Image (tube, rainbow, N blue to C red; front, side):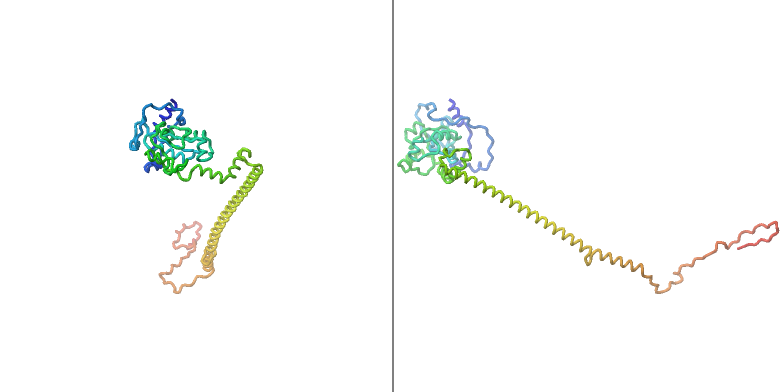
Length: 360
């Protein structure tokens, strides 16, 4: 029941319609995605843990009916299989495309076992249980089939009530066949998806093999022993020595960078000081010329002082013609204070009979 509820919750989720290659439509590509807290609370169930399906005969839907949309109780059952070793974004994008093939899709993912994978493809990094669990926790998966067959048989398709098989359109040659999906394509049950270029399990393994020494040293630093990494004693010492050498090189590079920064700062400061000195020197020279130059203020001051001095020590020039009578100023009249035009009144006669004198 819990598995059915999680499956129902996944089918009821509102999903954004994408193109067949996993890219968003042009109108939605540049828009903002609204915040949403709806999400799966449980991993996808295994097919062998689910209750048996309805006993009614299973009737496949056509491509036209699937694209037009089916009722909620009758989703289009799409199957996608693979190894899914080192599960990465290329796997997730392929499953997303399979999930978005039709408006109402129930995605079933088959994962091959270790024995079958090692027989037909080669050794894997992750074991089958790890690969099963990785697929179960992909958000686009509704159901997981463990120990999936390498070639799909009609009995397997009928057992899981599969309508369409999703895979990239590149012919997959394996198990003595040029294309293991040839009979699926001929039956009209094949739904192509686009392969994500630039990422694959082989590419990831190639990176690890190419940079083997780097990853060995990385894990030795993280506490793994040489025995766990299958590294000999001599190689372990060599890696430790390389790590010390790299640390010394890093310190030297840091010192060089700091010295370059210091020299650059000194150059900037010196250039700034030179520019300021040039500005101040130009200002000083301009002020000096303004004061002591040929037409400076000091020369004008000396000329003005010399003119005033000459004016002070030289006598005034006599006028060329004598002024007229009218132009002459009247001469002032000087009078003694003891004499006056009016005589004082005669004094009364003295009884002595003396004769008085008037002095004018």
